[in-house]
Length: 137
Image (cartoon, rainbow, N blue to C red; front, top):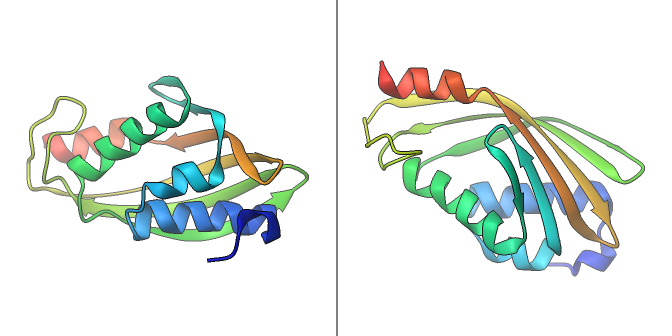
């Protein structure tokens, strides 16, 4: 893979999303995120690479077959916005809810702030209530 210094901001965001969600490659966190990364989510703010690993690992455990498809990508200044959709089967505990075996599908938007060739801030917008509704029904 190319070093992050040679990638555009859009390519950095796409590479991160591909490696994390398609390849299940947690080393993308070390390679492409700033050491003081901040994730803003509906569940609160998470700071640092270890927090990011924990958040992503929870998704891997709950939905090991999760597939994410990018629908559109916009890039301007230091931000990249990816509109995506995801689907997978709830096969492990997720946020305290035991595996249900139910298939879920949902969409969301992620905004990445990229500074000095690293993702420094990350906003994740998705309808968690819709996900919970699908796995509890």
